[in-house]
Length: 475
Ligand code: LLP
Image (cartoon, rainbow, N blue to C red):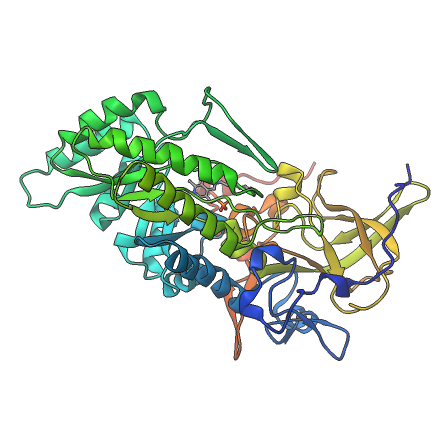
């Protein structure tokens, strides 16, 4: 049926950042577009001073476009906010699962952030990006023996998730006792009993998560760790969810974690660090209204100080590990519009040259995005259309009910806020090469991910000779 939603007759200009005068004060996670976004004389979208349709002409389509200024601003707002509002030590970790690549990790590290990794691959990427191992925290609910050994050799901090991992680590360390070695630094992850859903949260007694220790295991865990000479417990970790628009769940989390800090002290284990995970939400559509990074940091800092004061504890080093709100708002994906299909009285499909392979979030989570036509930014948005990807899958829809100007094949369509969990979850479904990514900065545009070629798609394929030798039947 025809949608009854009324079409907003304005233009793509409405998505531009609110204030371009005091860029550093805008919180990236509250904007739909990178902070440097403007409209230029050609009526084109410009990011970081670069004309977006021209970038597509040069680097191809689809194209992830990352604005360095916005990425760095998000890092700085976390880092400087904690320095400003938290009287103790602090460290921000970038949760690299949101987008793990050399350039993104190196930029975050150059802003003083550590990195959270969840696999040997992410660990390797962070190391190759030049991140110092003492600022890398290794998570994961089923780390392999090879991953644990790698992490121990690198000497990063291991966030222990379960008994098997703890016992394996202890055994590995004890096997190597003869060689002189430093204790491995560990954190303990537990499920705090706070469940978060995007716009609401509930505290529950019942804790159903594959990650971390159940709180009632913690006494046994602490007793075990207190006997391990070669494992050094530095802190506690918990993560309550993602794309959260309230601060209260994290404030509640802090209170739970500080109580556990007191429990650990009974085992002579002073907790030096508390890591409250990530989760701050970002604006994907105009209706989204997340708190700013600064507000979030201020509130959690106050909560930690209050919780420690109430229990007369020294302030721990406060860690948080945002992913989405660091990298999400810094990036857009530019596509080229292709075929259109009008189904009278039902809907109009506009197809683009990517889809669920470069952005699997709509089909996976029914996530919503907004879009604009980057080569006619001020044209009135009079059309209500559905933006489809090019995959052989009916559900490959990027945006339902998008409002756009009248589009033509060849137009440059931009989907906003695609930096987090797009490239990192991208696939080669239907053997589509994954897009290139460019980093736009003041002076230069740099390719930070090469576009995959057809040869790349075959790079891991092997054709055993005996199979290749089969005659190819033609009848
Ligand atoms: N720390 C831990 C232990 C996590 O599991 C996560 C995210 C983060 C930090 C970072 O959370 P953020 O600040 O990005 O919300 N693929 C999903 C998101 C999965 C998040 C998984 N964990 C999506 O596309 O929405």
